[in-house]
Image (cartoon, rainbow, N blue to C red; front, side, top):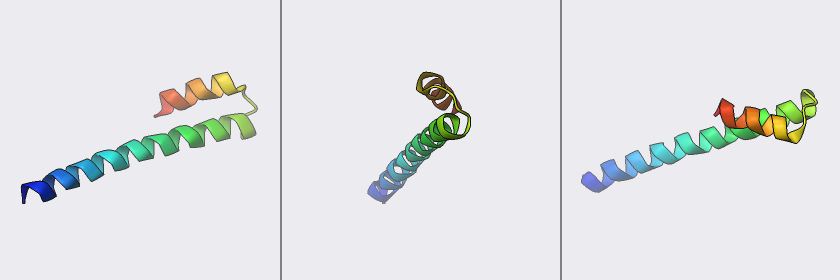
Length: 50
């Protein structure tokens, strides 16, 4: 039972991390393609967004 609980927590933790990466990439793409910002500025915004 403890292993299942640990695996569940591990999976949830990794899903949250993956969601953060997706948010960063989405902000980066949106800022560079749509907003016309430089890659450096867009990267800083993406890191702050997540």
